[in-house]
Image (tube, rainbow, N blue to C red; front, side, top):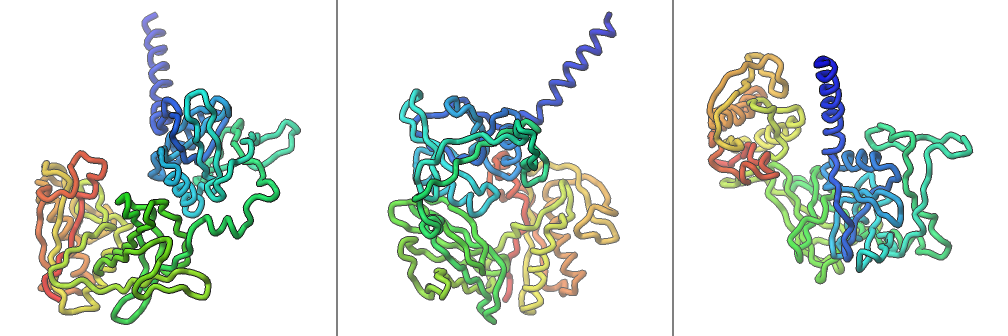
Length: 413
């Protein structure tokens, strides 16, 4: 009898534990609030599919949640709730352009719990038609492909996805819709020394609200959604490793300024002339990452350390100091690079223990070793270890990982 109870208990625990990761990954809002606008990225008749889709969006770093809409009999998955209608519309437009959520819309407008909200097309700002269900396997038996997420994992076979009704005749023309998507910009990022294009990104900042609106790729035509603020004021910031940051402040409604012009395709061309770092400048290697507890770089760090190498080769007068930092000052395990010098792999590493300062030193040192291996004179490089003494954020904050970094200080140019 005791054996039977034991196995029953184990079974219950197994069932409970097996569902924890599935549910905990999705955040559930307790209720839809009157007067709030929700940026919706999907709607489902089956709850567990809403949970899966929410988890999928969360894995892409979106603050995704879901809620059941009684009058729709659907679970809405959304990534933003705000009382500012224009902010919601702007975010939905941005998602349609920059993400896989090409059908994002805004749900809101209810002034009380009893009143029904409306679904809004963020492009035309007109009310969407009735949200209809579209079963994966129709009752007629005609087979259709199972809708999939970008990860290519099919949803459950009984998945029902909400689809907007076709746009009625007479609704906004394609030209009007394109205009509503935002102004076309081309951020021309190039090196000052030889006018060669440089790969990079440009951040668009809403200066009224002091928040980032979006990030766009340089050197290609992009649609920049309106910041939907009172003044139209935006800041365009470009920071490419190895170069000084460049910023342009302009008005979205009337984008004019030094060197800004329209090209034959109708793009507003904004020039970003990049100048190399100079003596006294300090640049953070944001795209250099390390294995946990290791003085070894992860493979995705290769591009940025190669950029540093190119910078040193380009200017033989450069002398630099590499500053290593950790998140917190606690001692612990340290994984060090072995004799084989695998800069981007844990193959052949060795384990030991040491202080946070020692770990930060090894992380700066592995970059120095990489540069030495590529032929840079050792007299041009110094290393400084700080451990956790100079954090950017609190060690327990959501952005604490940014404390783990290596900075490059230009000593001579």
